[in-house]
Image (cartoon, rainbow, N blue to C red):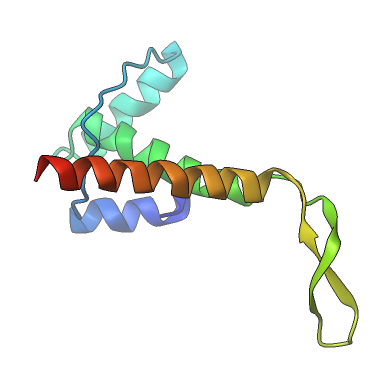
Length: 113
């Protein structure tokens, strides 16, 4: 989910699966005030749920912010026939690590069930 989609998500009160591990975060005063404003605007959402959704959306948006670095391998051609090279930047590594940890999480969950 992207940051721009959060308001619709909050309006629909969608639910997702939560990780078992909790994280404690200390916010700057300005962030705390903005979180309080959101909590008042969406009184059916807890501050924890708002923060969880914001962090999740920010991590999704972060993927598109990593700079592209041209690799050496051609992976496709565009509509004009020009070569498109693999991304040798941080995006593939981030996505691979994300998949790896998601698989670990799923494996841990299946052992508990």
